[in-house]
Amino acid sequence: MNLRQKQRAAAIEAILESAVTVFAEHGYHGASMEDLARACDCAPATLYGYFKGKRPLFAAMSEKLMTSFGEGAAKAILDAKSYAEGLEGFLEHFITFGDNNRDLIQVVISLHRAPETGTAPDPEQAQTARVAYTDLVSSLMQRGIDEGHLEAADPGILAVCFLGLVHSAAVTHFLDERTDPLRPDVTFAANLFRRGTAPEAKR
Image (tube, rainbow, N blue to C red; front, top):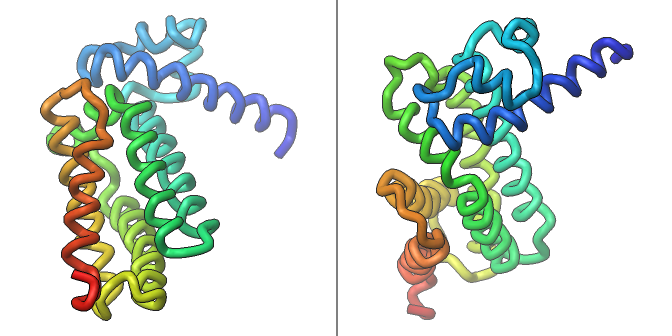
């Protein structure tokens, strides 16, 4: 990467960081390119030199947000020394990330439910990310089976059940625009999973 490319990459990173605050405060429809340029301390024409409009800028910001979440989830699971440590690490990351980004996540969720806006993720990219995410959690579930914490079952199905519970709890929390901590809802959902998938001798 040459100097010009490095400068452009740094500028894009700064724009995306500023955009987070604008979209979180005003929502997608309430934010304008003028608002975004003002937050970046640049002229609208300069901002258009990096992003051709609000839609691609929002898409890039959403991708950055999801990449950050995915990297943290992978670290929590892959660095863990046991299933229990991996599960707790993942849940801590999930809860902390949700609480720290709740306003923006509410915007992203609402737009993903309205594909006519054109801001929903590309279906092929979304599918690739979903498979990678599920595979990551499946590896944790397999570890839980091997260590005797989970009943012997398809780890992929266990991953889908686990993610369905914790994501449903979080999405409902965000869509209701609640301001209380996410932890009680996600912990309750995770405990349902633990009880329902424990080996029969441990129930």
